[in-house]
Amino acid sequence: MRRIVVTGVGPVTAAGIGPTFWENVLGGRSHVTHNKLFTPSPGQATAAASVNLEEAMLVASRTPHWKVIEHRLKRLEDRELRFLPNRTLYLVLAAAQLALEDAQLDEGLLEARREDIGSIIGITFGDSANVFDGKPSTMYTALNPAHGPAGAISMAFGFNGASQGTAAACASGNIAIIDAMEKILLGRSPLMLAGGTSAVIHKDVGWESYNRLGVLVQKDVPPEHLYSATDQDSDGFVLGEGAGVLVLEELEHALARKARIYAEVVSYSQRMFPTRMMVDVDEQGYEYVIHEVLRRIGLASRDLGRQVLYLNLHGTGTKQGDNAELTAIRRAFTESQLGTSVFASSTKPLYGHTQESSAAIEAIICALSLHHGVMPGSPNLQNPLHPGEFLLKEARKVDYPLAMNLAAGFAGYHTSVLFKKYTH
Image: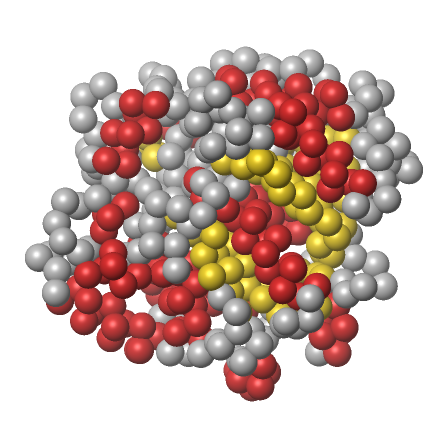
């Protein structure tokens, strides 16, 4: 059976772009600020986690066919009644460029393999400014639906391999990784880009919708202390934006070019557990994907064979969602495992809840965590919602073999992707 490894990562977030992202993950400080993109209306949440778009565009401009992308975007923008920069495209192009640079894939190798290389990118809402601005938009028709980001990557790098978008709300990034894995496992490609992108911070429809749902946190505290998850005082999330792209590569292909390997991707689970309310999550769904992702590699959740497991939680900060996820974990594992061989944290308070790109960003964290032997902490966690030492408040240095990325989405999407420390 083919084995799949992560050889490059490209994080583009409010908590850093490229290598600075991991440094900030270990630092554990939230990068939530007052909303820099617009002034919210009275009564609305005031904090957000936005990306430095100029920095992201500078990175995106390093893509091989940037001039072609720029020309095509300009032609579309010229037709608009006013300029609307397409943030989702710039963010994902920057993430893809960073991932390929990080994987040390030179242009010669990419050119030789361009017929086989594809990209699968999670996106649901598209670029909110272009979708919801209230004017006819050629940008929306041409690039904004789910096909836009993957198509832009193919244009920017000249890739001809199988590419597509995946739309599954906040589970989109994990499902993009799963779909890319299957392409490699079936022998369709030796190398795929997988990830997600999101830019939903929009002053009218996007922002107002989340405020009406009652899921955005509102407290009279400094922004950097506002967002926590799995805490007794958590009462919602801070909306973020960003992109994350991973280079997934067939092991033999990676070894042949002497690539650095961050981690191996060994298993996945993707299930639907529809709930009564479209925005709920289901503890049974979480428990199922935890069991299944381990069972597929011959492990039982209650018998990990003395192996240590880290879980990067979906952990959005909503009471119902966090409690469902933690309850599922307590059902899946024994109490004696929690805090000794099973640990967990939520990293979303670092960079905001980036919706459909969140799982991709957290997959990057899982791969880097295994590679560096450090489990990240949970920013602003003071009083854990569930008792025990398994919820990490701060980063912990430990050489361990397994990391699981949990993600769920509106309507009942539940997913897990399992990473393993690479050994020859």
